[in-house]
Length: 511
Ligand SMILES: [Fe+2]
Image (tube, rainbow, N blue to C red; front, side, top):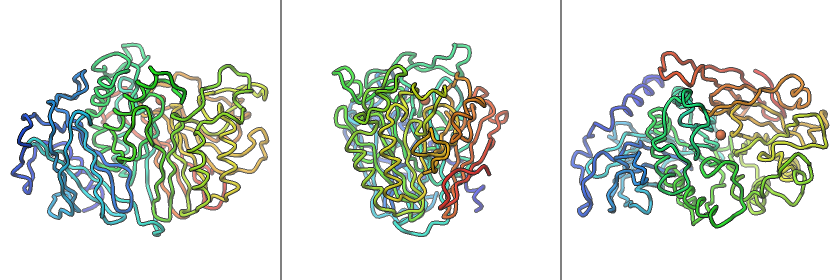
């Protein structure tokens, strides 16, 4: 079957699969003691964190996803959930199956981590609970460590406020058929959109700020009902990190008791709703999200958590706190982990997936003022230590992957941004928002003259498609013609600009 046909079958299958009872699972059973439930698979299925022998398989039982109690319409009972992994979409060749239990303490979420899968191959999976069969998901394992890999295609996405637009970005990513989706934060927004009511394309089920576990759960429940988002999860494994809006706008590592109760609720709901490994399961207001992945000998991904351990944001524009070497955006332990990892070079490309703008941005040409305290600008000493880490440990081909700012950017990285001749160390690809609004004025020619390391910016909604080969990384900055138009036939998704980084050559080149 051609890739195009296979995709069509898969997407058609996803739409219909909930209604289909597949042959080998014809005799669906229920847990003896658990009350009957309506179709609990309304949030779809997902997979994530691919390793060479394993990938996380996720679903969450929720026959009534919008219930404000966050319980998704599930009775207070333990349910057995059967799962299967096959090498074909028809499940004629099942390679693993099992049963796992879930209950209210887990928000009736399911995280299965099958082991012993083959490296670098495609799999299909599905679940069964209460006599219902889930849609079919497609996933893949990472290639074996060190394996020669001809190409890795992944998509970057971030910032998808529900009311601000339709999720065409996910439709576009599914059509691009990537090996991986890397989601860089702001999967949900805790606050209702600031857009005027007339500009919102749809409404939240409860139009208030989430602060409780019930409301965080229900907010994720609503997001997961989006058909394009479901298709995106079902088509490709995701690697996810969170940013601020999964908890609260611009939160940081400092703690009050109220803060910490809210964080615990937000982390729990995030874990329940994402295809994360059990190593990420939160313990109160703490969760281990930073981790690394290898894609054979081609690519390594370090996924950072720049929220949980950061010093409080600087305020004002006096540079003292911005430059203070005692302040940190990563925390000491994560920084040690990262710099230690930099000593080994198992792959051609070294990607640093993280939340906020890494390169320096200077808004006024005045060295005595500092800006953007929520980004790495506000933690310049942390940025210096990471940049020196790449240089001193001779990390090959570092590329930072960023979300947060609701605008595409491509930038080169250097140690001293004020010296426009300072050698280029690496590059940064910043993905715009999938939907979230950006009211800010775009950079003008004066701004670019002050920031010559920034090569490109585009104030439209979209995602970035990154094709990685042993010879180059190519970033296609994809833009959506109109996120306020629901009809996909009236919405185009195009490449606005492409940039290439050649292996062994530092810096971006417009393609
Ligand atoms: Fe955002």
